[in-house]
Length: 446
Image: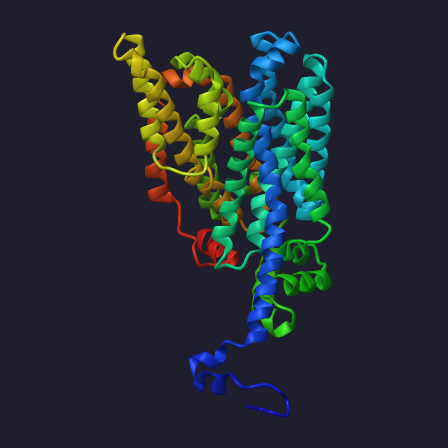
């Protein structure tokens, strides 16, 4: 031990008993840094909660809005699906916005659009303002869908990144669940106002959390880059030097490459990442998740429930657990087939309920979460903006297509799509656990 300098060499530390490595001050500092990471993640995933609130809003209020505003089925269908149109436009611009104003700036833009949208829905007296509000909410969550997982992946230590990134999907399904449940007891206008709450909390919280260090390094804010790393991963240069050097070296390599455009994504070196991102989003959406969610109340009523509320409540509660999207689709489809042929009709409502709950729960912990986590990991930072916009656009186009043509898809084969996704993941998608973002991207895009 060097008493004068108050430091010990790495070699002498290795000779000390293991118990002496547990320095109370170091442990306290580590916990303090972890609190900053957790707080930053919580503020970010409030955007995911808002995402879920928007997605879950239409199902429980369909009857009330249709009656109060005298909407036709076609008009309400436009209201339900225009969220995805707004999200598609948000997806196109999300990468550029996040690259231009930063990850925190993009979340501020998203919150502002979402708040404006909810206020428009609250004051609507007809279909026009109702649709404008829904469109603005869609634009907001189109940006949230891209920037939240990106921000979380870029601030999280590699040993925590996977767990923290899955909070994105968890908050989406919690937001949707709360919206489902609240919609069974609250008037539709009041339910719209509850969608503003997470945005307001996020706007306040963004003041207190650091910007993504990787974005700061990319745009040349060196002082802010080191300050953000210290707040997140260490309070002095020794704690963050290795990570800082790794990020800077990686960015230095990327600076020799020209600024990426959408066409550049189809170069051979990026194709593996694009195939993974687009493929996962395609399988995620064409399994039928948005059709199931948007028309849950109508589906339960068609199955024979006297009211859709019982199914909606169970549907909301199950979103955070379970397995088997294929099994869920198969059970629901079999139940409707039996009803069509007058077989065991008294069991049809129960089978449909079980099938949809199994489907939704399985989606929440599998294909719902994994594509967003991988999207935040697989693209190099020089193409992350345009690549994220492309994948996000594909996601929302799929969501719109499924919600608009849900009844036709149910006559097709959602179980087949779910089964195909299993093969795709097994053959194409890499393992990213325990690797830095730079290591993942170098291995995929080499």
